[in-house]
Image (tube, rainbow, N blue to C red; front, side, top):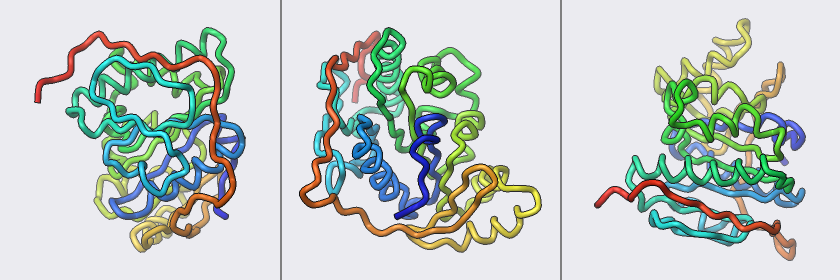
Length: 250
């Protein structure tokens, strides 16, 4: 078991930070399983092929930049083949499609996991119009049964307001000065030095969990899908992602 508040996750979302190899994806697989077992449809934006194996989600779509329609079920969207700019464009259009359906009455609870969210929510993103669909998701998505998790190895490169919005945060091992400074800003003033030292000393699969005034260390195990337990959430109304752009030539 690990500290996790389902109600809060569906209210304000989740943030997960940590260096490469700290265990962010492993933690998110545990979280996704918990969500799915509670009837939530989960989508994962995967940039590094970390989800197709040993995962609670067995449906993967490799995104090539073409328009597509997919069934509304737990799905990993593998966008690793897209260029950096096209990753941004595709994710914005995908979020737009999901958000508009929810605003227009779709009520099934859904959850988007953004791996390497600094790509889709760089510093200052919420101040402009280019990222408006993701801004809508973050600011009012909970009113329409649509929430999210932000995961990043570079918290200093993520829009500060976006990363601050989730009230449930998981901090893995971090040593880069700017990233430590960003994470430290979330700690209570009287415990900043103590918790910064703990942050630097964390090992693989170890995290600091923050929810309100509660901050506690914990360790998770490697993820293994449960045996003889169906991990499937599926709902009507297929997702149709349209494009007003052409993929950047290789």
